Length: 305
Image (cartoon, rainbow, N blue to C red; front, side, top):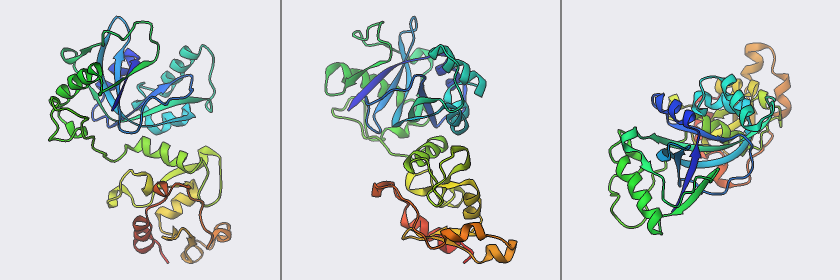
């Protein structure tokens, strides 16, 4: 298993450590670019800037995406590591040394289950982590240095209140990689991934204007649904409202249906009828497509027929 020791803004870390119940964070890169250092569920560790050359926490990698920073603020809010939208914009401009518009993209390293150590638990940087490293360095648990580092992290995680990220039976002294649990995504990560999964266009209408698009839950969290990629559809805002209230649905085989009740209740609905019976656009990867059982639930329990 790989570990990424990433140079981390000290203020970003301290602000997030001060927030209660942080289930996800956006470890953002102001300049964008590529990120191929980790695979899903591998850990990224927060190494504070000099002179605080310590590993102070981390999180587990979900995905890397390029996304307009203003929408990232809307999705993650303070889980971006700043208290306000303007503060986030100022920090991006500080690093870029140039003004940014609302649609300028940043790199988003999306992390689940972040953890933040108190100072007595901080881990000294590995001896070979040079001070001139700007972004980060990878280690592998198959090497002595990587194994030692991961043992130090897991030993501290055992003492945290919510060590669900590591299987309970896994002890840090054992050989081999820890068994990582795959919990549901946070809400911000869900919204980014669903939007990216549908290539930033409404699955029904093809609308591409981001401000008009919503990541919709097929089965709401309040009804037992989860923030999972296969429980999401990207819908234009008006279609989303109609979907949540049962005036439209998507069948298990992917066809969009409009209820006759929309005409009866509102004496309207004509703009949606051209889409009635059409197959929605779906991602090519079957794993990323809507869950059939969730679609069946909506069609049977919510759709007004």
